Image (cartoon, rainbow, N blue to C red):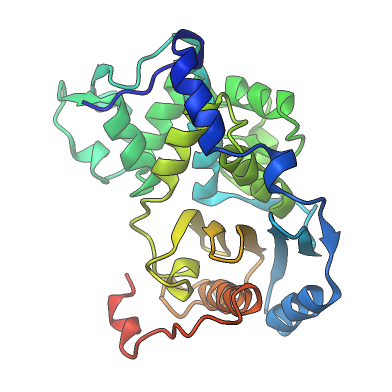
Length: 313
């Protein structure tokens, strides 16, 4: 049975995790704008019919590039990473247990995903709900996790305390109705989305052991046909994407041979609002992901096999 152990009760385990998850000072150089990388990103977004935000940072070298990186965009399902952090904060406080058995009730259904299809009174483990929220991006599971985390207000307090002044949960959050109408479930900037992934990667999100488990969860995405499709399948990547009619987004932290790099691409006000694999937002994210892989791993000989489009969901 899956078990996440709060840091305060298992000091020896956490000491080991600290060694496995390097601190920011040890693993990451101070970010600076790389002119070649900046030009590359500007080339990728040129001509896009809509608004685009991009932030890229190499954790080893500090190379970065930014396009509207501090502009607010809808998160869509990427807000589930914030919910994940809020939930693990409650687990670390002892309010919940990762292997805790829960009971699904019909009142928790919000769509026809896997969680929403459960029969009333079905027993399910919290870690399984977390998996459904992140891996399958199940909305009923995510709203259940948001409730267990203390709802949007508690998650937003955690975000503010940890230096995220723009990223917010809007749904089911008092005082955020106007923001909900404009951005939907959540809002963020590309830079803050990247920073959240880096916080988890460095072991500083909630606790080292919580960060490690969250990173493991984020490396098991089902939705892998967008940015992830442009990275070799043998490479470890923590990923979360999101989609609305006029907005497409993805954040990937790539554990690459030459050094970790992380990028976030978010769009809004797209002209192309088709829910098709060749939506312009999806195409843009693939272009940027592929360009970044080639930029940071110029020695790689990997090429996407012919016929890959057959596996697009």
